[in-house]
Length: 264
Length: 195
Image (cartoon, rainbow over all chains, first blue to last red; front, side):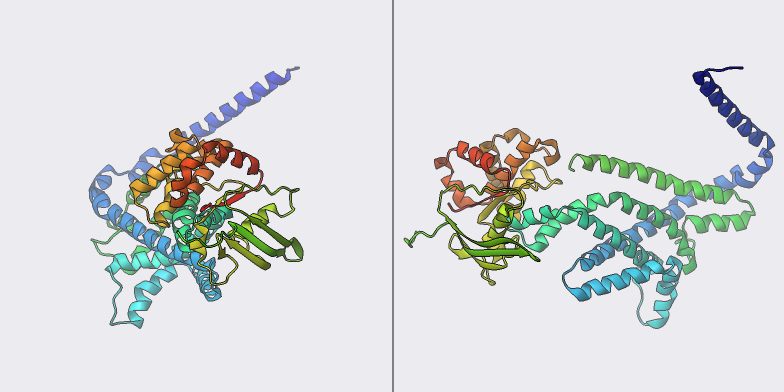
């Protein structure tokens, strides 16, 4: 049988559609839906998790994330400026810090802040309790990553911008603060969004600090409910709760970028 | 006003500038009088931009002396931020601030450096936008302008920095500004403000 090229292509396309539909149908047919629903979607368990998962767990996840992010951005900006400084010791300190904290697991740093520091300095207390420890513990690591991102952003601003600002009589500091850094932050919005989403998930490490009913976050809440009910439903709910914040976040950032696109 | 003998607006003596082994400026001498318009012409890579960048110390000269309005730029103790305010410069690539509107491009240095209030800075800015014929673009961002419009904004930004030039404006027809910018556009142009 002789087919023209166009016909052959169309046939191949249809065969692939068919294969895909057949595969999906087999999976749907073979799956034990009753069992899956019993294991992952028990409506009574879902209902029992509300509203606590939103009013306490999600709230805490967001708080921990924002705290760590804010701490990380401030630290990262400082480290980035130190890395670009003309003062050599500043550069050494910043480089050493970044190398160190990028290489350590966030979990280890969190332990260090949560247990190591209180043991070393028993008379001092980390401000903000669990929240403070998590914000600082996660922020220390996040700041190291953000420092490199922000440094790249500052270096991506054309040199002429600083020159133009200096030519108008601005001091180096004013020029950096009003001209270079605002532009650098627009450049680093996408990579910093990544960092924010990573932090949202890393906030689940909070459990190692021994959270209470008031300070519990989404993952720990899901795990506790899992232990309670001996059912996997809480994990599904916890997962969807994370997606409920990370996906809108991506949208918000896309909007933000569109708004700034005009000013590029 | 004191009646000291008029010094040239720009005075350059035996200016040398090297980039590593490459000697770009090999002993330049010249002066520019007040109100004088000078064009520096030469093939690309001959050091025109380097010369102008030396005038406000964006490049550190290797040797030689530069005075602008009687102030020695090459003096190590010179208050560079203060002196630069008196020197306008329009860059080859204009270097407008892309994150600010045209109006903010013109007001930011007035406010941060000259400490003018918002209202006064905006009045000066709008005056200068009118001079370059871009009143309607005050709220646009640089990326929304054509190259020629960007250049005119850069000129207006430079002019917005000086109150004395402001006072002199009526005597200087706007057309001269346009001619000046057209003549000097291939390179960056520099002029002392207290002309």
